Image 1: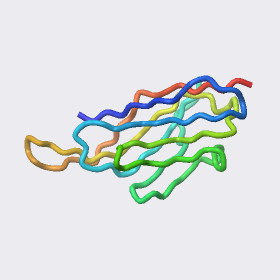
Image 2: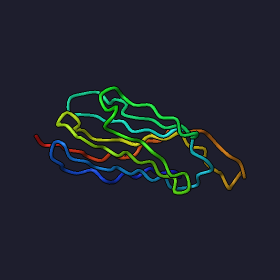
Image 3: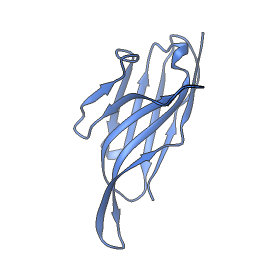
Image 4: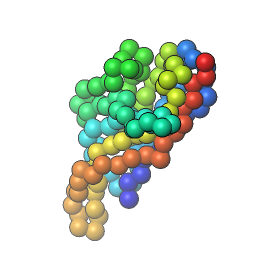
Length: 126
């Protein structure tokens, strides 16, 4: 069973910084794309940033120049460094990953399947 666990959310003043982490665990063979999404109250979930297995990144226009996504493949972890935070960045942030898992019963690689973390709340006060 594969799990994604986020950490690093909290309350910060406008202009401040936070670093989110998301660690994948379980019977992981490899991880393809990783991403961060967010959902503000009363709004739909939206893409924040993605990073491919090769390190190519993509950002929402609203966070370009302020947020940086990175990954540590040895730790199966993805990070989101958030600088110059604004009140409109307030949301629950979710980690997302496309993961190939190893099935020891059949001794085979399965996937990729898409997984979501449980979310971590980021609140930016004005």
